[in-house]
Length: 206
Image (cartoon, rainbow, N blue to C red):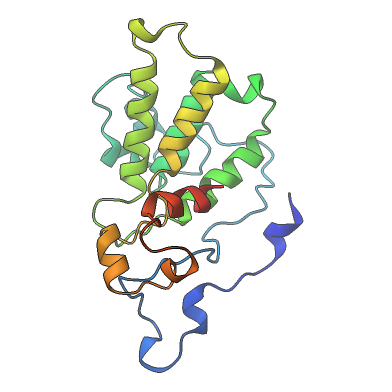
């Protein structure tokens, strides 16, 4: 794997002192943080849905609906060990044969997905990894509608699903205006009137 994954990058909170220690202010964008998963992925065989789980049977049953409206993403999260975004994206890319089409190594893709998923905040009630998985899956289903058949190229489809997966990464659970009003540390880096959460999500996903 890439050498960059071997570097232990301290998260922003590790630099906070005193009363800030152990707390994540609502007005802070976390940026790059320590990975919550093993980056080696040195498995003899990649798990069927990209993650190790002792609930593969129930997970498989739920993912039968990955190309239909009504996927229960909460059950997917439960059965995947709280990795709904990783398993949904991996399943979609397998379903659409995108890994083969664009020569993406499965282990590299899964490392990216788990790193991306780790940058969604589990303590945010709505804009979290479950929401990201839901939007990615909904985008996949929408692009499968007969009216859109043969409209988009494989690259455009990949881009749309990828955008859905990253669209709320690192969302702090508050609005753009709240972050500006509370002088979030990210906004002084750019013109406040032009900065937005959308720019932050895009930068985090890149």
